[in-house]
Image: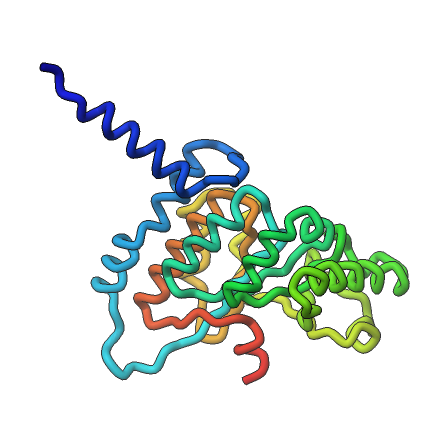
Length: 243
């Protein structure tokens, strides 16, 4: 009688994929998606924390993990899965038109306790626009987020880090930039992104990533594992800025 183990394993993998991705859009390169999946396994997290755990009573350093340009219909929910496994809250600076296209993802981000911020409606350079048009970009995004969550954002990250002079007073929002930028959108290499972050980050830093790429999602998980092992606590940007 022939052994059926390979067949049974295949069925288990299919069932796992259905459970993880039921109702989600399949996107990007399969190998990159697989890499992201493997990075959110809870047993890996426990192993890293056990190996690198901090001494009892040691004061935790704080760092904020932020994600721009979402919500992304392919990868944002994978990211949320990984953050939930690790008990981490992050800050998401959202594009207004993507908010309108993906309301359920925005709702999930909010309901899971992450902080939502404004990243303009069309990802435009606000400093190159008239004050009226810049305000419209911000207000449309605030309105789109408020319609889903019931709360308008208080924090704004201008695309390209380029803000219009005196717009702070006009919009009554808090501008948030960053301390560590691994340029994940450019290199799209998990290992390089991780290395650029963990070798530069310091206490109270804000890390910039994007939830548009499988490599960035995988990098975020590794960054969390490594920095938690080094005694870092992940917080939302308001906790750093309002201290």
